[in-house]
Structure formats: structure tokens, C-alpha cells
Amino acid sequence: MSPAAGTVFAVLLSLVSAAGYALAAVAQSRLAAASPAADDGRGALRALLARGQWWSAVGLNAAGALAHVAALHYGPLTLVQPLGALTLVAALPLGAHLAHRRVTRTEWRGALWTLGGLVGLVAVTGPTAPGEALSLRESLAVAAATALLIATLASGRLAGRGASTTGGRTGRGLGHATASGIASGVASALTQTLTAALALELPGDEPVWWQTALLAVLISAFATGGLLLSQAAYRGGLAAPLAVVNLSNPAAAAVIGVALLGETFRAGAWGWLIAATASLVAARGVVLLTKGGTTEPGADAGTVDAAAPPMAVTEPARALAAVVSVEPPGALKAAVSAEPAGALAALAVMGAAGLPATPATVAVAGSAGAPAPGPEPVVIPAPVPPVPSHMACP
Image (cartoon, rainbow, N blue to C red; front, side):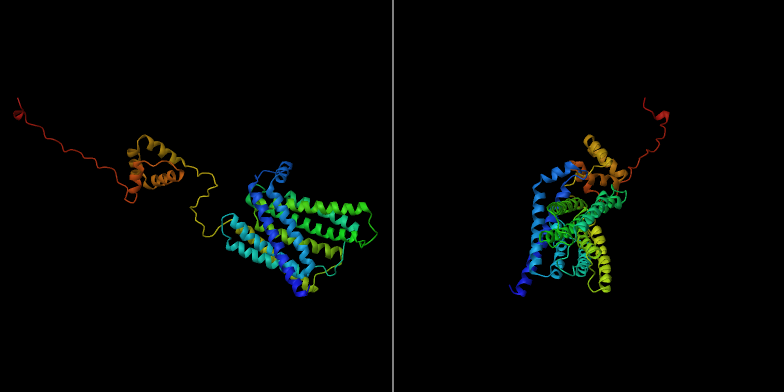
């Protein structure tokens, strides 16, 4: 295959990978939205494993991973990794379409900021030399440190004590997303180590069979943990957790490469500056994505969600309905005469609540534009002069 054809094939596979990851993220977020908020623990895990939608998400994630690996076979890392950032751009409109809403401008701005930061971060954090791998001792140390970090992030301690508030749930969701990205990044690093061990190219002494098996178990644990953590993260939404997952994955790989494999950012000191700037840009995007889904600019405030519970009927409306059922004409006329705005507001609530309208309510609503009539004047009869006694009838 020619280099040009290989590049085209790598781009197509990268797009397929991004689409697979995006579909999986949307499926996971919808599954998280359909699960009870208090559903947690082993019962939640059993319920999750029993859902076909969950296994569909697992299959889509696996397909995305295979397409990504195949794309790396045909194209360079500097081309494939930035294209993987399109997962967020694809998932955002798809999730909004399935939720029957439009993507807000704030969400689009957040996606663009995050995409720019992610591309800048990936551009300077790739491995400098192929075939590098951790030693077995380094792999075990990384696995232990990562497990402690994931436990801290997943516990929600870094999100504060306001777990019952919206901000607390968002913070905990981003903590789960960070832990998911780190787990996936470490699983990738350990996979590279396992590949080197199977090829008998692992640094240090040649590993025995149980050491290779231990690496395989650790990879499976981190990969599964990353998938379950992302599922928990999507309880707080789709866009912001997905952005954090995509950011923390290459960040974890970069930390491992710089700290243990002797790698450095490309372009030397400029690479460090670009990485820092890209991180700030991506952080700005995550903040916008966190705020973007909370409001819908231009949305009709009077629109009622069909899935939401019926609007509660206020006490004035209940009282007015009770009075109408007893004496409609007199009660409504008195209510409108005393307080037109309050009575008409109660009538509006009655209509929204589905209470039946009577002829009296229609008559009063039809005359709502007229000023409220004042009290009827009291006519005092003039005094009658006494009749003289000589004119009285016998």
C-alpha cells in the first residue's frame, strides 16, 4: 500500500473509531440518565450487567479501540491521535438530538476550546521512540499508585461535601471522569509492557509466566474499571465528563512517559509551554461544557415536559375550584370584583392543571380585559313627610 493510500485509510479508521467512541458515550449517558440517582453498589452493578444497552456500549467501545489500533498501523500517531478528539464533536450533537433539544452556543464554544486544547496537548506528548516499555517493577509501582489515586477520585472527597447539590454531583462526576481517563491511560501503558514481555523485549530480567499473567490481570482490571467509572461519570451529563475522559487519558500517558521512560515534550522548552497553554485552554472548555447544558437560551419558558410530573395546583386554584363547584356564578363574580389578577391567575392554573371549565369561568375569562366593577351603589330612599291627621283616610 502506498503512503498516500495508507494515510487515507488511517484517516477513515480514525473517523470510525471516533464515531464508535461517540456512540458508546451517548449510550452510556442515556443509560446513566435512566438509572435511579440513588442506585449504587453491587445491586447497581448487577442491574447494569443485565441491561442490553450496557453491552451495546461495551461493544461500541471495543470497536472504537480496534479501529484506533488499526489506524495507528496505517498512519502516524501525530495524525491519528488528534482525529480521536473528534469523539467529543460527534457525541455532542448526537446526544442532544436523542434528548430532543438543540446544542447550545455555550456547549459548542466549550467543545471547540476543549478540542483545541486536546489537539495541542496530544501534539507534544506522543512517545519519542517506539518500543519503549515499563519494566515489571515499574509496572507494579504504577499500578499501585494509580489504584490509590483512582480510589481517591472515585470517593468524591476532592469534590467537597456538597454531594447532594448540583455542583457537588457535577464535581463528583468530573472526578469519576478523571479517574476513568487515568485508568484507561495506565491500561494502555501496561498493554505496551505486556506486548514487550510477550516479545521477550521487556527491560530487565526475562519475566516468568505468572508475571505476564499478572500484567494481563492488571490490564483487564484497569480497562474494566475505566469503563465503569465513565458510566458513573455520565450521571452528571455527557459533554463535560467525556471531555475530561479524553483529556486525562493522554495526560496520564504523558506523565508515565516523562517520569519513567525518559521522554520529554516535543520541541523542548517550547513543548512544555505549549502543553501548559493547551491544558489551560482545555480546562476553559470543560468549564463551558459544564455550564452549557444547564440552560437553553431562547427556550420557551412555558413548555412543559411530557415526561415531567404534572404541575402542582396551588391552594388558591383548589379553593376556587371548590367554590366554583358549589356556586359558580356568584363566587367567580365576587372573586373577580375583589381581586381580578388573583382570580384570573387561579383560573389559568386551573386550566393548566386540567380542571374542568364551567360556563361561569368562561364568562369571567371573557370579560377579563374589562376593569373590575366596583361595589353596587346603595340607594337610600328619601324620607317621607308625615301625613296630616285630617287627611288620613277614615
